[in-house]
Length: 408
Ligand code: GLA
View 1 (cartoon, helix red, strand yellow):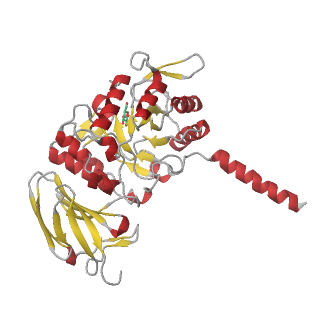
View 2 (cartoon, rainbow, N blue to C red; view 1 turned 90 degrees about the vertical axis):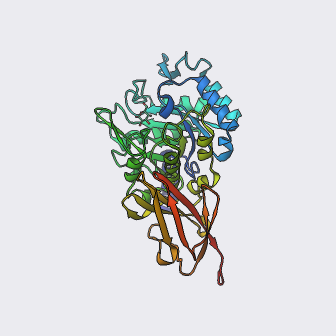
View 3 (tube, helix red, strand yellow; view 1 turned 120 degrees about the vertical axis):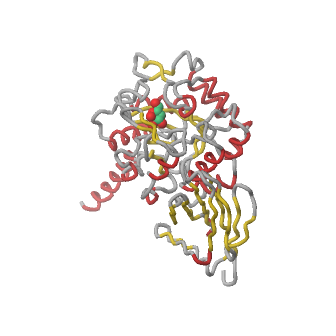
């Protein structure tokens, strides 16, 4: 008897595990890169804007720099049809989503879309509550590659349960779709979302300012430094396929060039998703250069996927480190103040140890070449002392390139 029962139990368990699978593995192995409509365009989205943005993504060199996802945020929705299937707004998206996905795919890019776990989206369009499986099926049929799933109008819903339902709906629909949870960190998604989605927002919305809080009445949006400070303690939850998301970027949306550079550098140190939020059709050459800096992008996209950490803090001046592959490190000196600061960093007096990754710099024994990632200048090695002036609201970002020594 036992000989028959045992294999049956095994089969039942295997089937149960397969049915329960709810996250596409192998997606977002490095933080997703792309563009999203919300920060610059708000509700003013259309198929023309998405096509033009896809074109600009290619002509600006952003696609070749690694930006792949063209993500439509809120307000693309029309009504549900008589069977409950969601339709795009017929005036703004007259050719339909399938045609738009085909256009974007033909450029070597991927298409992202937006919905909400509640009855309505944040801008009052139809939400997915009660329609999760139908919506997931619609996205899969259209050829969508990425879903940002918001948290407005969810009165009383359980966050983990609601995101799990959409995760399962996406799995059932069968198309590999990156699942981006936009729950603002309220229910600590880093503690439960790793098996459900590929990234989760850690905070409320970003605002176009370096260091401010914008009060919207019942909620606030936050400047770059405020959002950076809110990442404290979260790095242990991130890694390949499951990222902390400190929100889409505001580079090119009105901050100074220094601030944009500091913002971009710190997002790379955080291994954050790099989702541009500016108008790619009209961006300046300075903005384009910031967004396409290959060596800063390489820090963000490093295959180890280890989020950086603050090593030293002297008020306005912070020093951050991020372990990279091949025993390299990124270091970023952030000047939060508006006045320039002289910096002197004696590598030989410092020891950087990261308990989370088990990595150590061992400057007394190992030698690293120091490369400035914004100027491309060689700043000597860690045998010397680094001296530099960091302008206000700016960074000095370097890569420490491990040199092989005797015994390696
Ligand atoms: C919320 C999200 C934003 C954006 C808007 C759209 O505020 O956090 O990122 O998607 O909704 O309405």
